[in-house]
Amino acid sequence: MNDLVSLLPIIGIVLLFWLLLIRPQAKRQKALAALQGGLEPGNEVMLSAGLFGVIERIEEDRIHLRIAEGVTIEVARGAVNTVVPPATPTTGPTTETTPGE
Image (cartoon, rainbow, N blue to C red):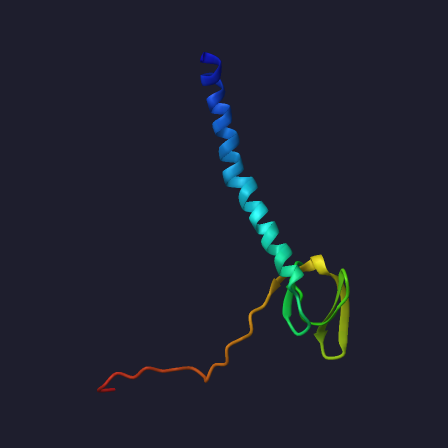
């Protein structure tokens, strides 16, 4: 019984390590794989290097990305880090006025 009690701190540290480091990293990796698997032409993306562009064409493991008018680069699908959400149109700055101004 004393042997089991002496192993509890080690088991606790392993469990804590798994909960704080391994599990969240596995979730992030799974989410990134799902994001990279769901890419479609027309999506605006950001590469892991910070480069923004619009997907023109997708091959098996490569993406043709338009970064400027007439400029298309070919990158690995794994380089895509984020899909940029479409911008919501704004009507301009809003100013609030209070009565009496």
